[in-house]
Length: 185
Image (cartoon, rainbow, N blue to C red; front, side):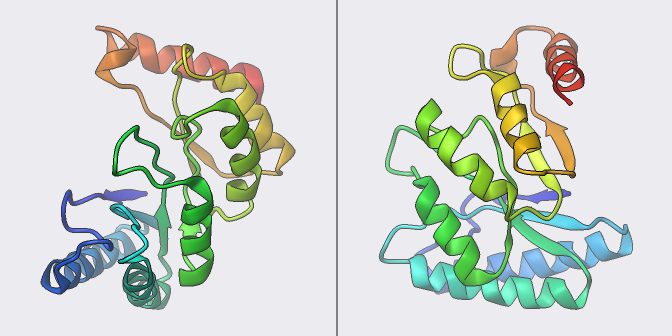
């Protein structure tokens, strides 16, 4: 999967020129993905605020139509931030369904255990074969999230995400996540 999160160039941009730039740049990277035989690209959904949601869906439809012609899947991951950029998981699912693209479940991007446990089975049913997995023990149990993916019948790949906040040694953080995955699958 190629990550196409181009900061402000996203499907929710208020400025139509910026949305068109996002479409053009995404098409370029879809071409690259096709040449590299990479099955997926992941876009940045921005805010998906109510006032731009329908335009965002139409933008995704345009990207998806282009990607389908190249045998590439367009994906998005759920977002949760404790600020105005928050995208509730049900809105995320609604936009994916309306646009015809695919989910890239990310077990760490939920505000609480209840929403994670409710949303992940739905999102695993909407995936094109990719899922982010991370370990934030103070926020959630990674093994429990992997269990949800197994119960949902997920057969795709897990992309490990380790960040500086996981400690000073990125290799140790990746190893921890790998050990959780191996013990869980």
